[in-house]
Image (cartoon, rainbow, N blue to C red):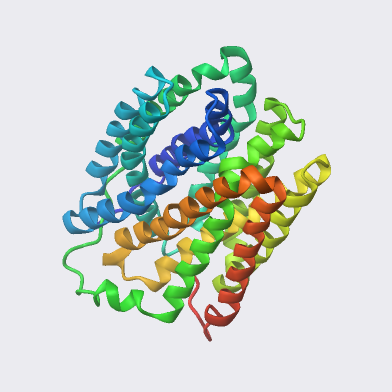
Length: 386
């Protein structure tokens, strides 16, 4: 590429994509609860977004690396996701929602890893600059999560699917502006991706990503339901979600300075230690507003710091020709397998163990991640920071 594309279209895509998440994440579980679904049914329907990330990112990442045309895939899958989601609001039966949502999420999960790979490629020469672009996703999330509860008070929780469909259409419009960014075919052939995946450090990285996402699985499924049971209304629930993302925004803004001073491996360890503390608070002290705010503030480390560090390590450990598949594998290991497993197991634990047992499981997963990081993901001498 003779000239680097502008990063503004990527920032716009992140904003739109996570604005959808800002409305979906805090309130989708409450919508499903309003349809009188069981805890297991709710956990299955919430887990569809993470289950889709097991299959879709690897498939679309492989296709993008093979064809070198990320933009076409980003646009097409975003459009198909919106089209499938249009059916969600036309019925309230479990299987109707299951099928419509499963198809929509399969295409919805395709675009983000490809956008991440392109953003990481364009910012590779300036450590931390990725976070300055990705922060617009957090801003989009916080905008919708802050006002989402009040919007639903006006339009009614029953109209949530149609509000989400509108945001999916906005994602399609944003995807249309994203330029094509791909590896240059004339560059020397990299070693097979399997050789990289077998390295102990790479396996440890994906294990840490899996365990962090597993710990967050119950959070994305039952956190809002737990807050409601503790006496918080929809407006306060949305604001608490916003506290987490505002903290995340601050970390993304500071990442260039942080990454210039601390190794990525130590940042990964810090994110996992913070997860132990955060989920311990949610398990035991969520009824205290001050502690609820503290737990949400730790989202800055358990998601913001963790995600930026993961992207940096992947960009450092994998060859450019494998970046599409590498980002897809990251999504599969973390948000896909990890998030799905954590959410589904949480759905089994919640009915008999409630808040303490479910989020106690999250604490255990984060502690295991700390152990993996300490054993196999130590800083290398003079390691180049991504």
